[in-house]
Image 1 (cartoon, rainbow, N blue to C red):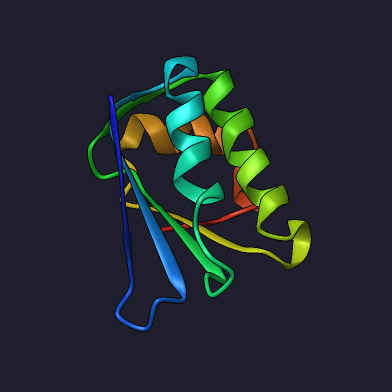
Image 2: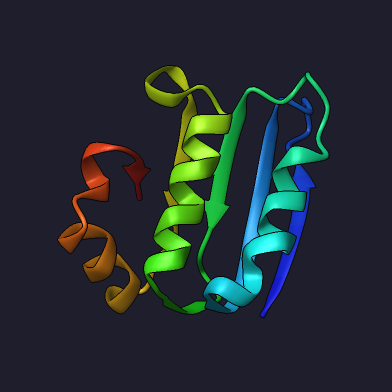
Length: 101
C-alpha cells in the first residue's frame, strides 16, 4: 500500500492516489495526505487506478475525508475504480455521497 499526493496546476485540487490495498493499515497515511494541505485546496480527487481492494475501514476513511471537505458542500470525486472496487462502492451506496467516475 502506498498513498501519493499531488496538486493540480492551479493548486486547488488535491489528488490522492492509492496503490494496492486500501484498508486500516492506510488510515494514518490517508489522513496525513489531506490534513496537511493548505487552505487553497477546495477539491479532492481520489485516484483508485492502482487500488486492488478496499474494506469497510477504507469506506470509513472516505467518509472522514468527505466530512473534512465540507460534507454535503464538499467536492470529493473518486476516479478510475476497477470493477471490484466500484462494486463495493455501489453496494455501499457511495454513489449518493460521492461523484464516482
